[in-house]
Length: 98
Image (cartoon, rainbow, N blue to C red):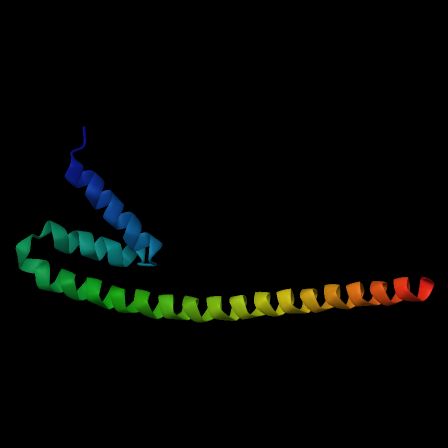
């Protein structure tokens, strides 16, 4: 049977993986963790370095998201103009027919 600390550890490793930490870095972190308090500074440094990489990646993704949002908005504007032109064209045709 597993205790809560094991489940917390597994969840933490999953988060490291999700944020892009390599298996090699996770193994290094686990090795340091197993050595106890004496390695806290090195573990903190490893996590701080990874955090900086995650922040950089988040910023890159935010810039990509902005590009996508802009492109989608441009398509919506173009579609709206096309529909408006069609409506105006149909209204003119209706008036000529009457």
